[in-house]
Image (cartoon, rainbow, N blue to C red; front, side, top):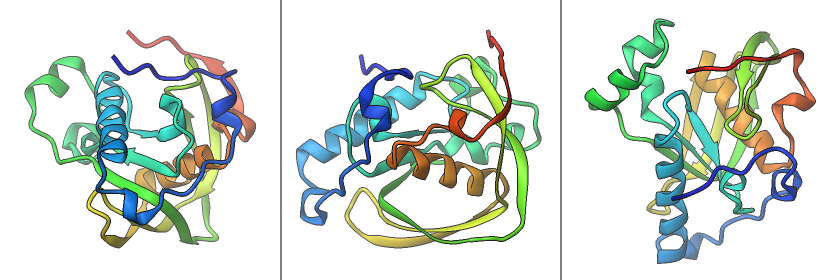
Length: 178
């Protein structure tokens, strides 16, 4: 089983290396992507994961398709039963992501992190963001986002630069989720 690295591990504070585009389709990168998806899917409340969170210092993050579930968007939150029953949108893979644009307007939102359990805090981030990246097939794409997805793009991009949300958060508190 793939383990999610916790705060204190040096890999979380490193600046991740770019993935050579010619390597994306190769078994090594495809296995890393599969491991990231597996690790993310074991966490019923996880919405995204960066490669350093599984101990791999590469510029990759994956966003779970569950963020597009209506229950999740409406704020009902995830439940273990729902995530097992529902067919969800596929995860989105971002290789060598670059934040091309972020809005000037910012919003304070509560964040947590699979690598900084059980801490949560409020982080002020841009309300809109545009990312340019490569998908799991090595095809370049651009994705615009607002709200939660824009927040996720910024959180995961920080991971690739060795920054954790606790470096920016206010009102940190421990919250244990069952």
